[in-house]
Image (cartoon, rainbow, N blue to C red; front, side, top):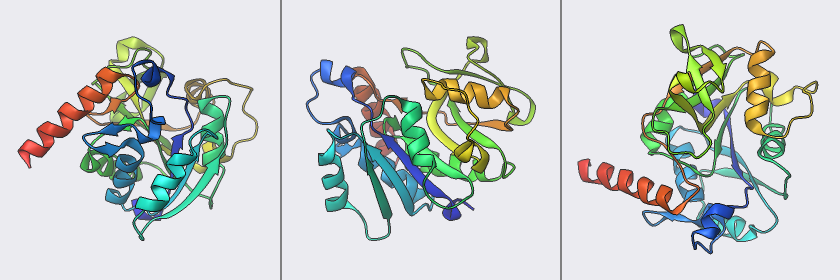
Length: 236
């Protein structure tokens, strides 16, 4: 059940590409359709029934902490880690190392998708084996350097890094307890390297597809996410 799982948000990146495109706010506070990215991700966790969440931001993003505290719904129990990390993997390990044992639902702050799609991923991922790590993957690939994923029968991940798979990671994960706590991983620089190492070390790994998710790194990504939000609002 998704509600029994702790959530984690990785929001410690510098957002350098958005700054080069003229955005002055810290990346978690960059708005899509009038809502800061951090607010959109918190709404996603609420939609999935996850109420205990650990958020990591870098030391230059204290305004993000203030925004969340000022706008937090009483239903969410939020823990902050304020730390400038050297990599996405270090941020991932900081977040996933917190909280009780068991799987953890983790999202990067720049993985923009609709709450109902996030909740659907959380529900489908929860049906996978308890000891498995589940990756959200998408065919909507707009990333400059996507992490490609190849799925086999029944959604099992067969390969990471092979572009022939046609799907890319979407920045949302259900991380097994083993993957959260493992101490024997080699020194690796990036989260993508860690995921590849996990797969190679026989971590059971599955993929669940989110059709429309945008990795918000550039001005055109903000526009793409806003277009998706507008279409959904129109259908509603």
